[in-house]
Image (tube, rainbow, N blue to C red; front, side, top):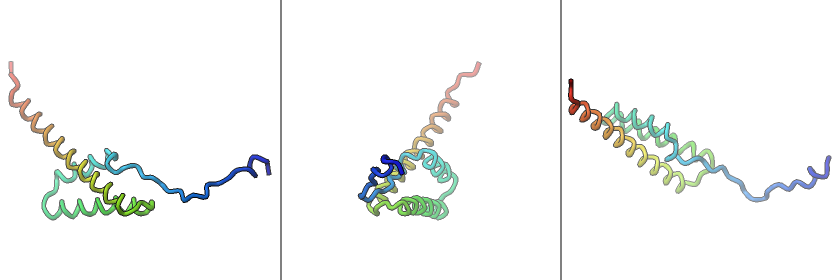
Length: 104
């Protein structure tokens, strides 16, 4: 064994995985917003609960603390709401633009 390998020291501290923030997962946010636009009532509520619980479980499996999971899921929920508002605003703007077009 080389001297370099014998001198390698491994960390004695507990290392942990730091997951990418849920609020930064743009594709997941957009997918959820699009899905929630197409379902309503109890179906929307069940979809939302299932999605948030699955995301929380993924964080839990990585060893994320419960408070951090709660904060991440709340931030994710906010981002989905913002995305839904943006999509709605874009549709309204497009409809208004179509209504105000001058035809030759």
